[in-house]
Structure formats: structure tokens, C-alpha cells
Image 1 (cartoon, rainbow, N blue to C red):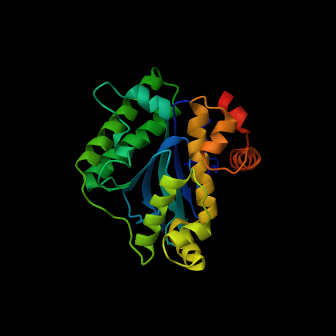
Image 2 (image 1 turned 90 degrees about the vertical axis):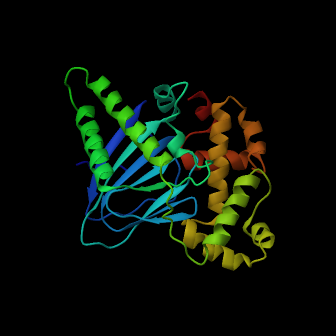
Image 3 (image 1 turned 45 degrees about the horizontal axis):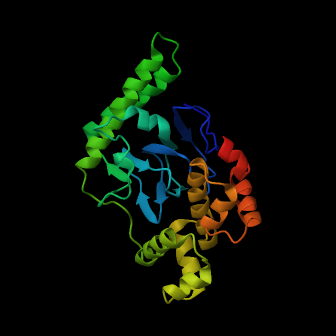
Length: 281
């Protein structure tokens, strides 16, 4: 068992895996990261928000989260500790494990029709994946001969199983509330118009609701304000553009920031490095 590490960036180049159990958990804000996440829920009382969809977690549930998705665990009171296994996989590493015929990122692809973040597994699938994840944790810390190859073999098995399960999965388990239809439409609108001039007022006008109602509904479902969600979405796309070699000043205007100074402050405040430093990194 490991002590919870609140960082949201990888310190290793390929993958990282954690097994956490907390009697008390302060929580984390809505966030996004530049890698894929596999989250295996073991115990506790948790609702997980992913891009406006809320999942009430049950023992053995598995979440798949891609680098573009904003998400947040919401921890409730429970008689048992909050326990989970979390696996992070670098984007380039996942691509290297794939083949010309098989993309191992398919199970994370939210653009595929009927995609769901949550897989509610059969008992046998739960047991298999928990065994594989536990074995990966052991091999990661092992000094045995060829432990690096063993890790890669186990990771490949996990990814193949998840993609097979995802392909055959047709159920939806997100939790509906009275705000959900409106907020999912608002999120879709923001995702298609993030590069334009957006505000709480302009979006409220677009959907014929008061900005006070929209603010309350949005916070209830997404877990953050409309303004912060727009900023985070712009920063996610900004990182992609910077990674592809586009100049920071061009990125700022392409992502909807009014000026470079505003983009610089937002980027540095969120990630702790400047846009130029991120480009070089």
C-alpha cells in the first residue's frame, strides 16, 4: 500500500501504478493530465465526475480516462476506507505498444459512439484485472531478472483485456440528475467553441437560462465553475498545440485567450511552467 501522492504529472517515462487506501481523503479539484488513466475501484463511497457524466462507483468498477477529459472523484462517508488501484500510461508509450493493426487506445476514445468511461465488470473479469494490476505493482518494484520485460508483458495483457471488454460493452452507468441534459449540451457547446469569446453570460443566453441557474447547475454536475472549465479546456488544447511546435503567441490566439499575457498567467498558474518552457520540454 502506498501513501497518497497528490501530484498530477508523471515522474516516469512509461507508466506508473499506485495502490492507495485512505481512511480520510481531502479530495482533489477537477483536473486533467497528459496521460491515460485506468482506475480500479475497490472500496469506499465515491462518485466520479468525468466531463459532466457522474458515475456512482461500485466495488470492482473500472474507469478509463483519456488525456482530454476533465475529471474528479467526490468522496462520501463510508464505513470502509477509500481504496483503489490507479494506473497511468504515457501517451507515446501506449502508442509504441500498439501495432499497425491494433490501437490500444481505442478503449479510451470518447469519440466512438456509445463510448463509456465506466466498465462494470463481471466477477471473473474483476478478479483477472485485479490480479494483473497487483502483479504489475510487484514487478515494478522488483529487482528480479527481466522485470522490465515482465512489466511490459503484464501491461500489454491489461490493455488487450480492457479493449476487448470495451468492444463488447453496451451498458451506460452514468447517473442522471435534473441538470444533466442541459449541462451535457453546454459542455458540448464549450468543446466546439472554446476558441471563441465565451463567458457565463453568453452561454446562458445561448441556452435561454439565467446565468445564476446555469452557474448552480454547472457546479453541481461538473464540480467547478463555467469560467474555470473554459480555461482548463483552452489550456488542454494549448498544450497539444505547443507539443506540435506551434508558437506560444499563435497558440494563445487560437485557443480563445484575449491576449498573450492572459494566456501566460493562466498556463503558468495551472502547470507551474511557462508556455515556452513546456514547448521545449
